[in-house]
Every structure is written in C-alpha cells, then in structure tokens.
Length: 122
Picture 1 (cartoon, rainbow, N blue to C red):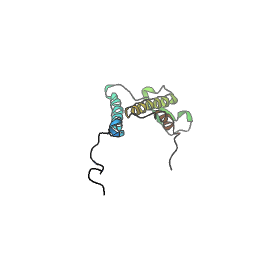
Picture 2: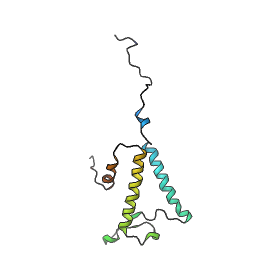
Picture 3: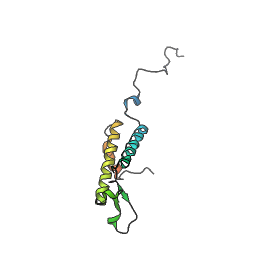
Picture 4: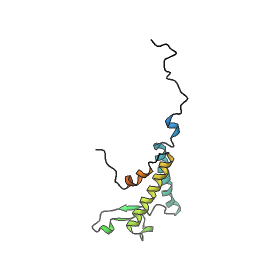
C-alpha cells in the first residue's frame, strides 16, 4: 500500500497552463472583430461610406450582373473588384485574428478555407 508521501498531488503545480501560453480566445476575438466591423459601419452616420465596397449578390439572369458593391457610392466598381476587395478585407482580418490567437503555422490554411477548398467532415 502506498503511503501518503508517495501519492500524487492534485493541487496546483509549477507548470504553466497551456491556456496561459495561447493568445486571445476565439470568443473574445469574435467580439473584437464584430465590434470593428460595427464601428466601420457607423461611418455612414458621419458621411463616410467605409464598407460600401463590399460585395453583394443578387438574383441574376446575366452572370455579369451577379455581383455588385453594396453602396451606390461604389457603383462604378465592377462586381469582381468588389468581390476581390471583400476577399482581401476578410483575409487580412482573419490573418490578424489568427496572429492574435498565436496560432502555430496554421495561417496557410486560411486561404484554402476561405476559398471553400476545405474538406467537409460528413
């Protein structure tokens, strides 16, 4: 029978917890990204259309009219330009978010995921 001195302790240890080594949690990061986009959308109250370039899809008969910018202020932009701007904005936000979470070399997975090239686990 093991004595009390040989029993492992379940109390706090000197090892650093893995959560303390990581960056920001996914939940707080989602809140911060949401607040950033919300704050950018408030620019309309001050006369600045900061997100009007984002892509909007609509019902279409001609493929060239499938994509368009959200705002009429950017109506001169072709739909593909608006799509690329939206993709670039999301890519930058997601890369900054991944860096805030201190991911280890997983940034290369963002582009295929964003393009829809990930495999579903059905």
